[in-house]
Length: 295
View 1 (tube, rainbow, N blue to C red):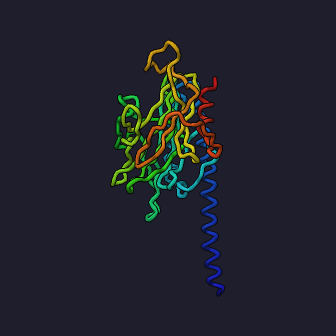
View 2: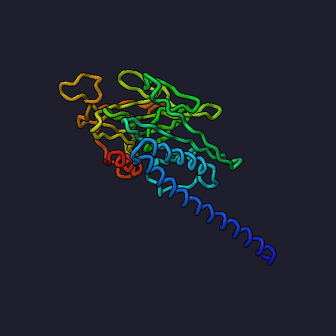
């Protein structure tokens, strides 16, 4: 290798390494800011303080989403936001919750995309419409509208060349009940997100998303098990004396149901064994739930 070429190669490598180091420092800086702001959104003593912290958090998230390298960065030092990669690396999800003084919750989410050809980043801010829709288990939401929740994992399935991304999440709902959510995300031919798809086969018909609602102080589980390939969740029933549909009195009965993906549909299977999947790390959601339960 001749000397001029060696020198040129050294300069190129030096610039590249310097750029990578600078980006790394930027991410460390923004991780600390996002963590601090997200914590304030969760724990500030008044709604006005939470709203102010949330405004700053939105500004910082939108800035981070356009920083070169952010799509491939793991953000492992943030545990007050849920930051998830689609299993096929087609998008990244940034997601958080703001609890309010009246016991309600506001949810925020961004989908981030990376164009491999142009090497450009872009994102879409989602609009939580859960407070304004009824029959939510049968609705399809488009145009950036979304049934707000806090997600813990993304499951990817394909059928007939169609990709489905199943989001497993949690909704604090209100002072009386909490919800567990199974949401279906897919994309139109022009790559626009659609939330909800008629592919969840339940005993009462086909749902576009599945929602379990239960008593506020009750603990339940819903998670995907890699080994069994089931989304496993508690069976819920009203306590003695409570009427069916009074979800503030619904509790687990120590049995489990599951959904398994067969022939393009999630299909209900009742009374399955309780699986213990130790491989999954749901630290972010657990930390956020713990913060919401703190006095």
